[in-house]
Amino acid sequence: MSFFQRIKKGIAQKTGSVTQKFIKGLRKTSSAFVGSVQDLFTGYRKIDEDFYEELEEILISADVGVPTTMELLERLQEEVKKQKIKEPLQLQPLFMELIAEMLSDDEDSNRLRVNEEGLTIYLFVGVNGVGKTTTIGKLAHQFKKDGKKVVLAAGDTFRAGAIDQLEVWGKRVGVDVIKHQAGSDPAAVIYDGIQAAKARKADVLLCDTAGRLQNKVNLMEELKKIHRVIQREVPEAPHEVLLVLDATTGQNALLQAKTFGEAVDVSGIVLTKLDGTAKGGIVIAIKHELGYPVKLVGLGEQADDLQPFDAEQFLHGMFQEMMEEEES
Image (cartoon, rainbow, N blue to C red; front, top):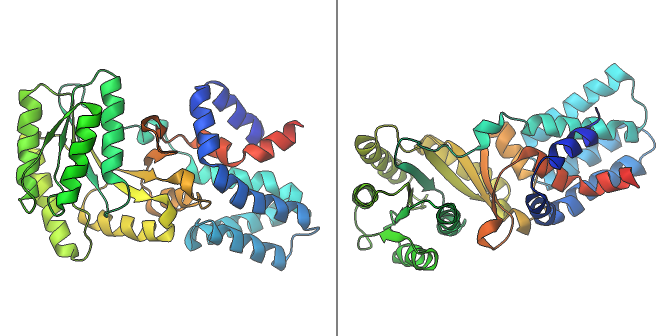
């Protein structure tokens, strides 16, 4: 079964509205990145050094990252020799297969873990401005729509604006927000959030945290303290530590991921503003270089545009134009 046939078969079993969200949300990436790849494969008559150099430039420009790009090129060159491939167009399906391999994962690893026995706690980390609070608000909206009782904890006490922003989302969604004054101990806010969630028999507690990176030592100590408080009150929690990254920041998102990975046991990535960038290759770099599963992606401004990451949907959205060409 070919790459296209496999992806189409997987997509046929999934919700049409979600497929359309991925297609729409990845339009910029598909047009810029995949369009350039297509032009390269159709424009060259032979596979030579110039061909590989241009492909390298396209991949790095799409924020696939240097290590991942080098591995992709190395594996392509191996297959060219092994299969005695002469024409670039013959290499195109193999190129897409290799990208699919780098994104493939057990589907369960991309799903948010849920505590079926009681309170589920998600801890959100990430620098300011990446869409952390908006992600929390959108997720609260989705959980509430699913009939879950949700509580928010305003653990980013470093900025008064962060507390206010979470309160705005709380009112909009119709969920309780537990807060202290700006400058308070974040761990104390999270503790009160847990107690309030337990008292109100909530299903989910979503915890915001500060995102400053100027002093990594302070960040690490703060997050470790929050972890200790959560685990003391709910031993198996947090059920997810979700690192929120802005897709439009490209390679800077990888640097942030490495820094937070040193500070806290990250269990998954939320990639926001994927619809706002032509450099969706960052998803491949995050998965391949860091090994973190991408749990959620932001594909637009509406609450329902925050979607569980699905490798097949992502690949379908990226390579949509190629698929349409194959069918015509």
